[in-house]
Image (cartoon, rainbow over the protein chains, first blue to last red):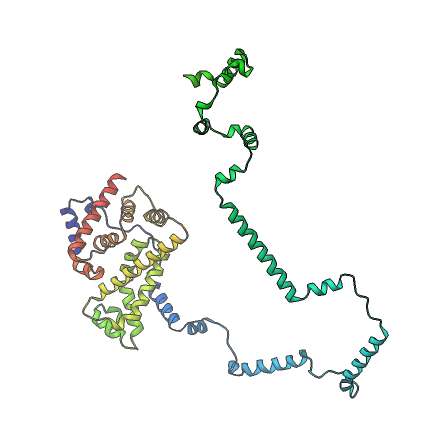
Length: 234
Length: 186
């Protein structure tokens, strides 16, 4: 009671509204719960100490005296009895004639020799020699080595030729081929890229007059209209 | 003297150390402390079944370690300390389980458990107070609960929580302010 007053007084000193709230816990507890806590705890403690004790105590059945002592012997006896009836004996009921296995190798050998005499030798196939040659291991290894060497030389040649200067390679191409390539791929070239390579001074401007090109003034105006000459000129 | 009448800690401990009276002494110990520890745990974990599990663990630990209990500290604070540690462990486990199952396991989840309680009425002040308490951080909730409900003196709280009295007073005052603000704004 004294402590309770102390708590309330403390809250009052703090000016807290909690001082005026009843300190009750609203949670419900199952009826009779607290009367069973100690018993439940003791049971749990006993179970943790020896689970088998609790298990045996809780089992309503009884076991005949000495049952577990004789159980291993009984189960072993049963297993042995069943084993005899299921697993067949190792001795076979059939018998071979006396001396059969001793004479067998000689008999087989004699039969093979007889067959060799009576059966003609097989005619070799046409490609049999080639197959025999190809099946010779050293030869196969030599062929593989040659293929690897050939591939290596080819690769080396490719690398050596590819290191030649570009200008030297281009000089081997004829002017006609270059012109044909440029005309075919004219759309891929940017004007700004081409202009530095053109020697403007060497161009004959007269050859670009409408009369010289065979174009009429109307053709030129129509072309400029189609390509948006206004925007380009302004 | 029948054990039922025993309330003195020293006599109870002596009885527990004797094989003949061990179980009877333990039963008496449970009877004395069960309700206080129950409510201490339940204010933290909210649900009865969870509280029961934690309380069982607490008393099992008491049974295991009571022989080693040294009389320098109070049996009452020693048991509260076990109960607090077991509760904190349980809360941590629940958080881990929730994080694995991607559930929301914060104060929001606790308030959900609170609202699921039988007789919950958000308009009643005692329930509103519980809602406010659930918004506090775990350790501050324990401090508030020990002081406000268990009426535990600060020196005893210091033993239970291994924290200085000054820090506990500051924590309690902050908790009171937070709860007031919650109640006023809700």
